[in-house]
Length: 497
Ligand SMILES: [Zn+2]
Image 1 (cartoon, rainbow, N blue to C red):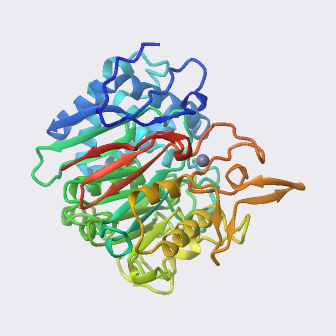
Image 2: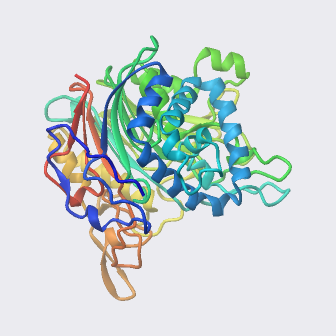
Image 3: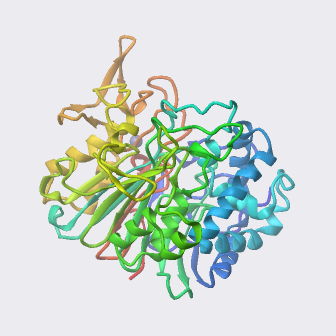
């Protein structure tokens, strides 16, 4: 395998992950670099930005592609089935956000020579390799096996957790948006970080950290202070596809969680504008597609947390309810009892008491929260693992209201305890007569997640890939690489100011 080029990082990136060398890597792949590879400021048309990205991160893009290909092939069965899914996604993005496709074409061109050397070089075209990296959660959804549509109970995979704390709840009056990619290490720890300055007059300058080849990933911020983070969302009561309609149900073409982060961070003037883009799209999308809402998706549903200097929202979307209808809901601070109405959290749970249907008609008779709230199928403390992280955030913020600052929120992310819905603190549970710390408890999840192995065993397979924290007023983001409890020193800082 080609050796990675010598990297230079911004001088303020002096922190490090002390356990990075223990994180899981498939045999034969290169070690993770100590920080996300910094690609600098990428400029020009979307295609030119993509080309610079592809050229500077070609080797990493290849590892990420191969890692996902190895993982997704057994789910999908053949490269032809993957390609058919990607064609549907491409056609949808052509209507919703064609800029995403231009960017991905540029990445594919910039990384072409390295992708041609891949062990899976011929299985997918270069553009489809990049599309696959940007569609991996959708490709975790199994293709149809029956002619009868089935409603999912729970997909069992939940990822990412975040919160926004607005000025009135913080010590210095500035808004803090924190989120984590609660996923596995290989191949996702092959990270890049960059600032994009598009020549597109509708776009903003923005920064994002991604697994190489992704365009939006989990957390992005633009020069208006609009910050967007994405999450797997509602997974219960979602209709599946059928052999006769293989791209129905959760396999409908739609806006993938991470491409949604790109879309909103690149184009939103405000948090409210980001909500509009993520729920109903641009006027030309509605005119050209005949649709009234955006079809938001992950493997099942998707959540987006959006904020700016003054406001915060959670968008909860599903591609198909029990009848196959897409829905979205908008949650605002205060609805879940948030003190002062100045913070909001989301951790894959859907909690809205209402929804909008595919005709964009408000439907109070169909609460989004039936599709996967914090207490459905509980495992410990009356909560599922979405609920454990959700209520931990909610109580941490409430208990420190008005005193919260960046250092405090970074410390929260290192915590190995859980607050239940009533605010009771737990740091262990009893399994087969043994006391097990909650961060190593299967079917439990802390804000620093861990737990991939049997009770009490750390397998270093995953969770968390990285944690991001952005301050809107300062246009500044901080990141860890890997789990926050294993990160020492300051977070990797990038500023759009
Ligand atoms: Zn930890």
